Length: 189
Image (cartoon, rainbow, N blue to C red):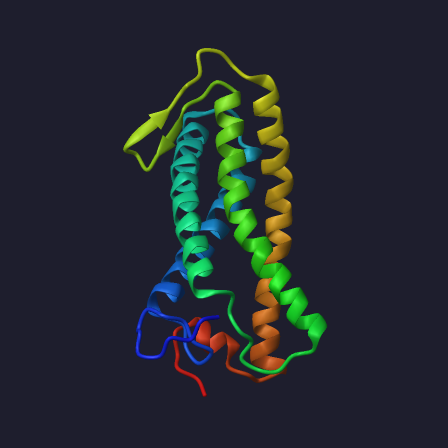
């Protein structure tokens, strides 16, 4: 991670910038809500309520895509977070894998959802500003591929989020280091 002291927008080992903290929590909470709504609405019978939920889900999904792209650019600029405390190499490798998995999944989910929707003949709303499509005719292979990826990436994402949360709790309660405090924007060290 680049350490540019004096720049309040830069992440350091001791503190994440308010921008990093905000991006983390906005995208994290939104994705957890989208996963929960996705699981809920998948089993709903056809109805106006289900249709409305799908519309909101798509709208939030496109917002997640844009925020995730911004977060990836931000992470690329700032580098991956340095561990607060010395950790065994295997834990550092696992944490890096979880972080990269989260970054990839936050793009894969909205992209596969858009592919699913578009391939099945529906438009894809972009922040309520405009829509992509619908296509002139359905594209079955695209809808099927999008559906497959969206379904399995969702379950993988749930697992990665669980590892991420467990890791944060381990740092806080077992290791008693300041990793979790840093993610809330507190200054450590």
